[in-house]
Image (cartoon, rainbow, N blue to C red; front, side):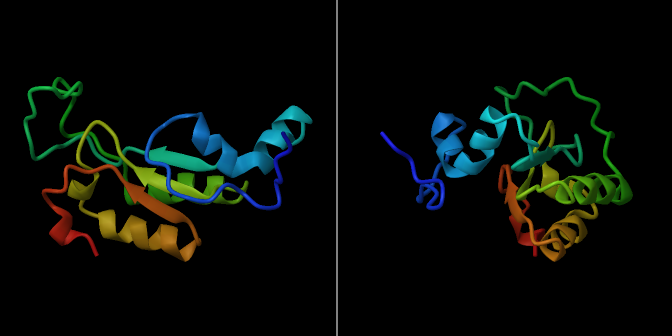
Length: 129
């Protein structure tokens, strides 16, 4: 079987499995050829606070006051964007949309041309622009 890396696999992938790797064949070939490796996605946990108390949550005993500053997130995202980052997913041990500067960091990602994803419980989506 021959895979054409000029035409990445199209479609949607919603799971964390090896199928997603097929969308980045150029990067896999770089790894095989021991060339430079560029990140595809950066996962950022902006805040540990959560507005729900789900019984199944594995983060139940987290420190609820911990959060990254806007400057910390911008620096990290900028640095990774300079080495080929494609997108940022906001996730973590809390609800990312509760970060007081969440809209600002999403706007910053958009300015850098990055794709943005959010792993959220959806309860506060009305505040997201």
